[in-house]
Image 1: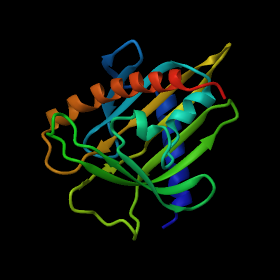
Image 2 (image 1 turned 30 degrees about the vertical axis):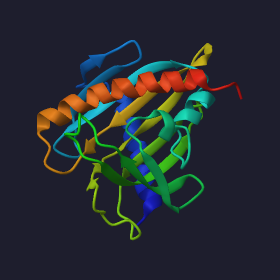
Image 3 (image 1 turned 60 degrees about the vertical axis):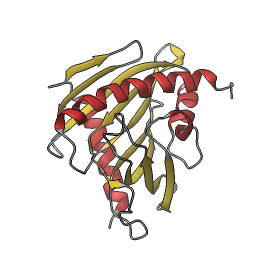
Image 4 (image 1 turned 30 degrees about the horizontal axis):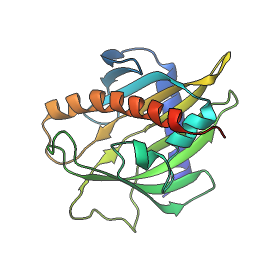
Length: 211
């Protein structure tokens, strides 16, 4: 499988989501984030977008967000229980397994996801993680976990002009959780989960010492 091609296509996809303002409907607002959705063109579900400003430099925010084993993300993100690198393809592209805990008061059982992930930096100082589902010979579905599938998703840290200690964080999620979940459970889970994501990210960035 051409993982490099697949990963770069995801980054292009996220950029198109970022630029295309049409069709978004706001479904949740908090002090930290505005969450919007529109029907996904990838699967019979929704594409969710989070847009919020976090107090912290892009470097600090990225330190909290970056997808690495034993990184800060596992500590503050309630939806990431474990993160494993299955194979390093290039310096910026890896195949990873993410394990998520049960959620929605146990209605959503533990999941695992296998993704190709590209870390990409842009000329304007933005840095992004870009992911989509893949398969890997070392990681067949395992008992105890429902295998879910991430369609093109990721996080983008964007510098705020004139505000070096602030970062715009854009997130895109379109996840097929797998299993037999009622649509209503999925539709209520993502907006509240994303609001919690931004709240916990802001706290994590605030707790980081300067570096």
